[in-house]
Image (cartoon, rainbow, N blue to C red; front, side):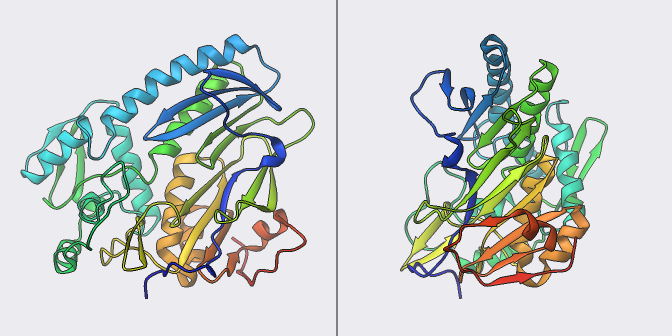
Length: 357
């Protein structure tokens, strides 16, 4: 049964907690916040807040200007359904043709192949046609009746995968015309990794980069670590906290924000590449590490893997800290992650603890 809209569902996500005051305010390019100075950018339709502590404001402004140009380039040429280099490449695949790609796109394709392999195919950026068929290649939530499920099954039966994509120098081709690349599952991680790299190059020591709750960090707030809050997206209360050491990143994939709803049933935007259907049961997966691109892909792969297989996939992908939440409020996590989470006193979740990762 697909996830029903009901009040009993507990939906958890990781976001910057209000305890540190990192909330959006105003439209200024650079503004003061309780933890320092914050600049806001946008990439792939997501707001990115960059907060630095104990730094010259001019340094943040210079970094912001540099990243704004790079993010615009990413948005144009890595977008899955708006005119740009990736859309042109997908058109070549559909026509059975190879295409020369730029050094800006080629590394992303190679990275997608690596993540596909590490996830045992559960993270599959080649299923753009399936994602589009469900209506998620749009800036707004899809509405109306369900797509033709027979057509969805037929498309899934073509098994588009990153194994079908071949890179020879700067020429890329696909042996499967049903392959359509969609990097939405890890491109934000790539963007935040790039932002972290730029800040390091400019000598920034303490920073937090937040894109919709996906977070990269540098340093700390003085002697205090960056602290992340776990919220219930329905009640927006902070239900638990987690402290991050310098350089740690935390990423979440969730089924509670992007979905299409038909007759009271929510069909999530995370698609299982094995059958072309939206993933149900698991509401969110959160992982911690030091590679945003890998974590971005891993959090999606763990949702697809579900409660029975997430531990194996986490091991394959080198994830050391992970927590999943299902639609009944059950929390699945490994001992290392449980040791770091501080739940609020009034929370009473069913916790299923796995072996160590």
